[in-house]
Length: 188
Image (cartoon, rainbow, N blue to C red; front, side):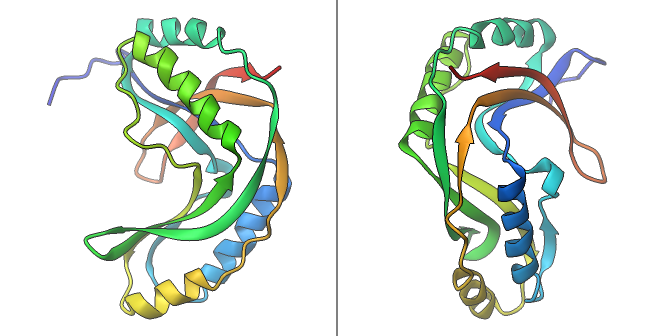
C-alpha cells in the first residue's frame, strides 16, 4: 500500500444524479425492501447516483486535466427510465440491491467518457451496467425468502431527462461517504 500525502490524491468518479421524482420512488422501494429483515444499509437518498466511471485515487493535477478533457464531450440530452429491481450476489449471497436504468444513450455516454479517460491513462470499464445501487446487504438469514421479496417489488417505470453529468470527489468516512461536486458538464 502506498503512502498517501495530505491532499495529494483525490478519490473521484463520474456520475449522473436523479431528480426528486426518482428519489421519491427509490425511497418507496427502500421502504418495501425494509419490511424483510436484513443486516446492511440503504443508500442515503442524498447520495443516490449512477456511476459512469470510477477514477479512484487520482493525483490532483491529473484531476485538473480530467476536468478540462471532459469539456470535450459533446452529447445531446436524452431520456432515461427506471427498470426492474435486481440483486448482485457474492458467492451466492445477496450483496447489492439495484434498480436498472434504461436507455441506450447512457451506454453511449459512458463509452464516450471511457474513450476520453483511456487517453489520460485510466483503465476502461470491464463491463458497464446502468444501475442505481439502493441497498448494500451484509447478511440475511432467509436468503431465498429475502430474494423473492425483493424480486416481487414493482418499480414504477418513471422517465426523466438527463441534462448533465458530474465529476464527484468522494471522501470515505466512518459514518458513510461524503460527496463533493468538483465539476458539472451540461449536455447539449
